[in-house]
Image 1 (spheres, rainbow, N blue to C red):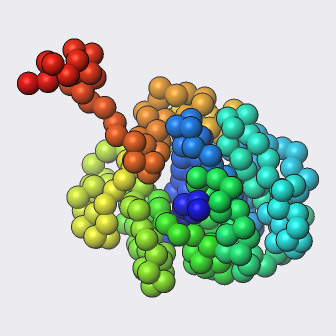
Image 2 (image 1 turned 90 degrees about the vertical axis):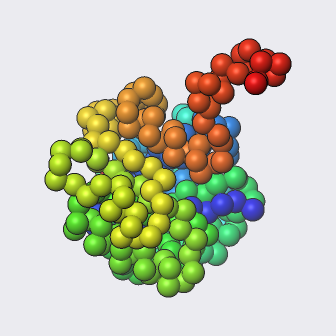
Length: 253
Ligand SMILES: Nc1ncnc2c1ncn2[C@@H]1O[C@H](COP(=O)(O)OP(=O)(O)OP(=O)(O)O)[C@@H](O)[C@H]1O
Ligand SMILES: [Mg+2]
């Protein structure tokens, strides 16, 4: 059974898609089988971040015609499987209240389903909350983003959702931000990722490649890779761990 992890926020533009896409690729790099789902059907961006321009079948088709599931799954060059949303400019209103049933059909076919969700607390967000088994809340370290994130957090807690923790994105440390301790205290939740404001992210979006592929050594990439390791339960080795392994067990003392 897959872990179905939703990436939520309150406010728009805080970095959900960037987080979902890079987490998906970073987990794939760790050898996990991952399906990334764009459930932000009204303002979808996953395909744009990944440079997947030609996807005739989308989550909207899946919602309208249940048997279409296999056709709507595409394989990105990273190995990540993706269920994109139709990002054409034509108006298309699709009811995604059945998302949960579709996601449960997917469970079992992969280790992880990562869902990139809509901002706010409209019906699409509510349907995504119902469909997920675990939750990541993305925020920026500013009061409006945090206030909005808190509303989504409460909605998730209201259905007894398992919150994995907070990802604080676009961190500048310019002295005008809330610090980690204040944010954790406000939510009473752990921060599981701190991603700096990093121009590599914007460069990667322009290049239509996730930053963990485009600039793997950038600060943002390292933060997303650490987040993936945390979620997958992979221990990050310290320098002394590596040194001890190198010297052998006889030298451990
Ligand atoms: N760590 C970062 N450093 C610098 N810029 C970033 C970072 N993360 C995201 N951005 C910028 O912020 C923009 C919005 O990010 P993203 O699309 O991931 O937000 P979102 O929460 O998914 O937005 P929406 O609510 O519209 O779906 C990106 O286009 C990118 O330019
Ligand atoms: Mg988005």
